[in-house]
Image 1 (cartoon, each protein chain N blue to C red):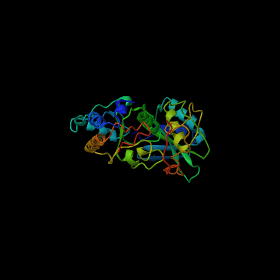
Image 2 (cartoon, helix red, strand yellow):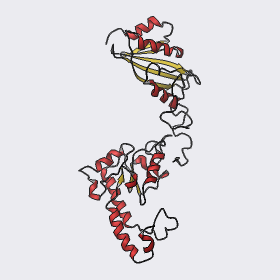
Image 3 (cartoon, rainbow over the protein chains, first blue to last red):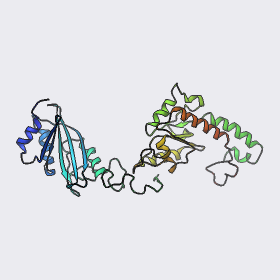
Length: 162
Length: 169
């Protein structure tokens, strides 16, 4: 791997004030950015001719309870042009929303729905924001740290609607 | 309903029982569906080494309407439960249920919000096969036990006709 991480270098040049933290561990680069800048930074990483982060490997949520801001969203990006990976992180407070990157990567559609389903983080301008793993009408977001593992009504018999 | 209606309370019914049960117990057709990893043990039970065909149950039916036995093989999630219940209700009587594996018996290791804690909450289970997963021999043992159970059943004992359970065991 090259000594200089091209994505990190370009981000430093283009968005010097938006890099809240950066960390390199065993060749993995993590950049923390403000949540309001997510869409702009992602669009830059995708469309810059030298970077071309065209592959959204994964998008996942975090619950850092009892820290504030409580939630986080992590974007794992891959550039096939440079064989280079970049991890973007943004912190989101309780009740706040974050911009959807579905307009950049189609793959973000279901991934954002999953984060919404299990963490309850809403995504702005998402085309179809509803639950994806749990069923319609389910209450609560199970991957939140304050959600009981067994869920509500665990001791009652389960009666499915047929 | 059938011929058993006119033969009830006559000496012919036990004879008919014997003939029909003999036919039933050697052609228990399971409905094809697997929910999780236990389904692989169910599949391997139909392969040459264990050969479920020795007991007449090799005909896994893709349609519940042609099946007699439901082998619930694997973890039943609450989201999947309505579909399983519907498949069971589409099966014609007489029908039997085997809960295969720890998850189907009791929820297994998944003591969580998303998993049904045992399929007996939604279906009447005849035999429980514990194990994670159970060996194919365990499934065959349950099948043989089911054949023994069918031997003892009577045509007069129909689950779908209320008030006619008096003659049944």
